[in-house]
Amino acid sequence: MSSLVEREAYLAMVGQEVGVSAWHLVDQTRIDAFAEATADHQFIHVDPLRAAHETPFGGSIAHGFLTLSLLSVFSYEAMPRIRGATMGVNYGFDRLRFISPVRAGARVRGRFTLTEASMRKPNEMLSRTAVSVEIEGEKRSALVADWLGLIYFAAQETTV
Image (cartoon, rainbow, N blue to C red; front, side):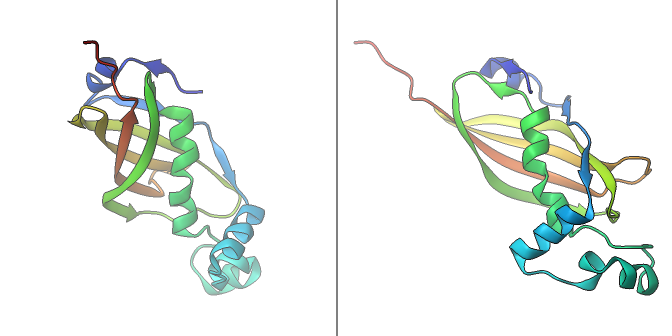
């Protein structure tokens, strides 16, 4: 579980690595479930025998978007939670590159560096995080991304 920090402490973390998730298995069952959910049944993902014979990958590989979708669970494990935050939402990506394929049976994890955090409104923070998804035992990452998020806080009570 990620740590709980004050808003000011989070803002002070800009430029620092803020967390690394646990390793997660990307097996053929997970790949097949993602193929069903997205209707992306390209053989390189769902036919291990054909993928072994007809691709340079040696077997089936995860969808790039499956790897990308794991950022959510990685961030829940690795990113600090901010006291008073009521929700966080995806705001998109300024940069995203799929570097290396994730072979069926590999384990992956997320590594997060906070590169920007600023209050856009009194109760809304923009957060920019450099993230890489590492493949266990591989030198190159599966993906690198510049991930944007909006973090919302409860309205401050005012006294009269």
